Image (cartoon, rainbow, N blue to C red):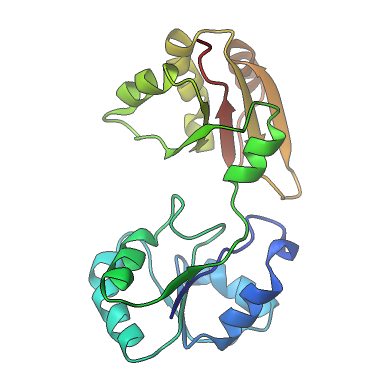
Length: 222
């Protein structure tokens, strides 16, 4: 069995009892960064073996993991925070496991996407999740396509690219497009900004962005 187990995006109390139990029962835990995950495992007294599994080694490690699963091992995959496979490693392993007729289960649990969307104040009945935008090549083209989307848009951005992102969006989305910028969700310094794109540019130029951001943008009106 392969389990994908969501881990807290900030507050450690957000992990589920089932997640803790399965991590303790697993023969092996695959972690995006063992240094980060070891702190979580130590906090909950989880002593299962752990090894790294991330975007730089998942291609060559996946066949070895599939072999272990075929031998009957129970393996849990976790990321640094949130649900594996959502802008984190996990998809390649899931696909390979399913192709090998190995059962896969993903537990419900933490992700920055849904809390940000729900508390944004922007319609959340229909939305498009874009993850992280391309860092360079194809970035403007993606934004041009997004600017025409009628559904609510949700995506992630790093603090050092946030102001540039809003400046790139201005001529495409228009200064009056409404958005919400959610920062450090569930963490000690969680904060939010709600307003127009033009107001966001002004605010973040005056307040240097720090932390992890989720941006929610209203769709273009028909």
